[in-house]
Image (cartoon, rainbow, N blue to C red; front, side, top):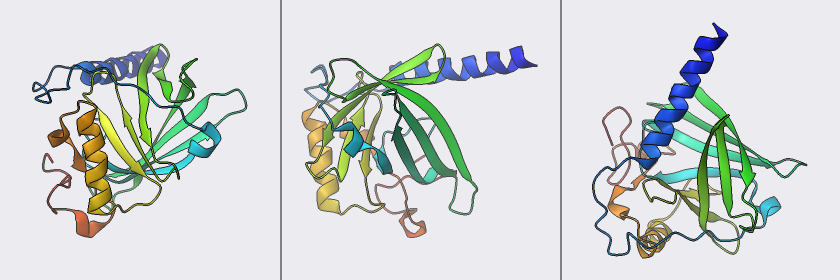
Length: 199
C-alpha cells in the first residue's frame, strides 16, 4: 500500500512538472524569449498570507475560488508554503496543500526551489513586489505559469492592469491570465475564472 501511494504521488509530481513545462499555444509577446529576472525580497516581510488575484489557469488550481497562500519562514531558512482554496464553489470545503521551499543561494530571497515532494522540485521566481509589500507577481522561468497576489482579497482594476503591464513587459502572454473569484459575486464576471466551466 505504501509503495502504491508513493508511486501515485510521484506520478502526480511528474504530471505537475510536465504541465509547467508543456508547449501549449505559442507566446505572441515579442519579448517572449527575454529571460525572466527575479527580484530580491525581504523574506521576513514577504511572509504571511497572500490572496491569489489572478493566474494562468492550470490543472492544480483550476476551478478554485477563495484561494490564498500562506508562507512561513522556518529557523533553518526554508519556507513552509501552504495553498488553501475551495474547489468549484464557495460552499465547498476548504482544500489545503503544503510544500517546502528552499531559497536559491544568491537570489536575494527572490527565487525558491519548491519541493512538491522528494525528488520533484520546481523553480518559482518573485518577479515584482511593490515597496509596501501589498502586491507581488510570481512566475516560472518558461512563462507558462504566473500569479498575481495581494495582501487583500480585492484589487481595483487600475492596479490589476498595471501588474498585467509589468508581466507584458517581461514577455508574458497576458491574455492567458484569469482572475480568481474571491467573492461569490465575481463568478461569471468578465475576466474571472468560472469554476467548472473551463475558465
